[in-house]
Image (cartoon, rainbow, N blue to C red):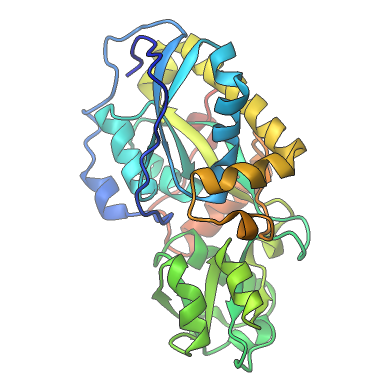
Length: 331
């Protein structure tokens, strides 16, 4: 819940992180454990925010640095977590007020009737092959050159039945490749470069900085799943609990203004993004200067979100359809 302002400063805790939707954990979250019941505090104060130690979290750190949240009377208490399921559980328990979460864990929670709300976008896939930052890669010695060569192969993804598998299957099908012949296995993002290099998997779904690691070792990109589905395809978003959205509209609006300003700043200042990355990720300054950056935006693309819901449902990433009108909250 929102607590009185603390001037003690912010110290994000670094835990290992992978973005993964865990249906089992979501199912264990009880809708009765709603945060902030009876709490109608106005805007202003400390808000608890869950993030990941990944490049697409740069805007919230930049917003904190540039004073956008302070301008709204908000102090951020940032907590680094392991993935979307932990974020959703934290919203339910009241540990977090806002979370930077992948759409699929959020859709899965909504499909199960959990009281979550989608506030704003955070980041998207690329506009071209040159700036897409979450792609399928193959090792230097692999014969795989394109999506057509993936038929009958083994592809590593960070989580089975998650957004990666769903978008890859949809991309392959769109390109005339029989996705039912592909074997998907779970390979955490940091292990993808080694796994494609030693042949443990034929190809792997990589995100930055691991895409750059593969390319520097002589590997190649063989498919652009999100780009196949659409330019700037949705990737990450900001969410909160339905209770906070209903009972603390001023805090909701203040956070929305601050994170929107932060995202605009990050979009317009890529050098600032690269400079801040080593302060909350494991990236060295040298690697931060080389990677492909996420594309930042606060705007929700309803048409593409509908496509993502359809793809997630078709390939088993979510248990049932999601009503976006009910999920999205207007600040």
